[in-house]
Image (tube, rainbow, N blue to C red; front, side, top):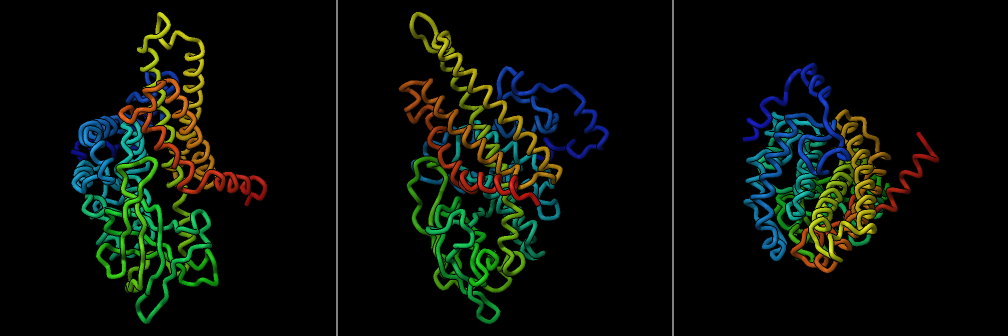
Length: 417
């Protein structure tokens, strides 16, 4: 299926340039912010991929998401279905089973998942955080063995970074890996790990030289079933209830030196190189959520009867919609610029931090307005706007708290390199 949809993706540069010259509406000009075929950063190949992805979430995810919220996880079969459709790890090079695409294709998956209001599948963590670490820093053996399984959905990936006493403070990581001959022995724990319960492989940050602080951290590929690798209970979260999140424990976990990902003591460097994409995807999902909430709110107030007319006839309501749309399309313009820069490998860390903090704050604000416009129905779980509201709250926390984002942006302003 995916090969047919993307059969024309590898056209010549001249043909791509011609497509770019064709007029595409900006979101502010479109009939809906979620319309297919708008936004200059995309072309007709992207449109076909988006249509396929939207249909997939509507048919394979949304009807069952309520059941998965109660279970606290999505079924593993969903991952293999997504792999068959080319929705997982599609930036992985072709020699390792991927499609070798640029970041615009996974961006479409982030956005369509957000439009669907279904946060259960931890696809972004798996595809666009875990897989790039292995692609960029793995040995040939690690890439050959693991990447095809991540692309197909046979394996599920997680990232073990956050600890009970160390979130954004990377230097305060307590998990240690002590060398013992040709092996390393890991002890410690991680918390709030997306895909932690289902994961087959987890990239774990551990101190190999505690005297160096953040610069003494290394990365390890820990596989499910290893003796001493223990998964805690699934955590009972405010939102994202269908996304499995848990604690992980490492008790005298012995791994061979070949399980190290990237150079020894260079884990901090690897993480810093990968954070811009992580923060970009959080920002993009934030704006997409805001777009979905705006459209749901507009539809609701234009249909809801009140005071001998429609809610949308009230000036206070129409003005609120005006604010919501303006804020959202401003956010979309900046995120699209960041996506374009990232596709050209030009996105800088401070720009990604700006996008992450501003767009997740926007997401939370728009979700709050959406609930208010829906009145009592906005407080009901069966309404998507309610789920968008609770799911939005964590966006300003993970991937680096927004307070940290402002600190990083401030440093780039006052101490430019």
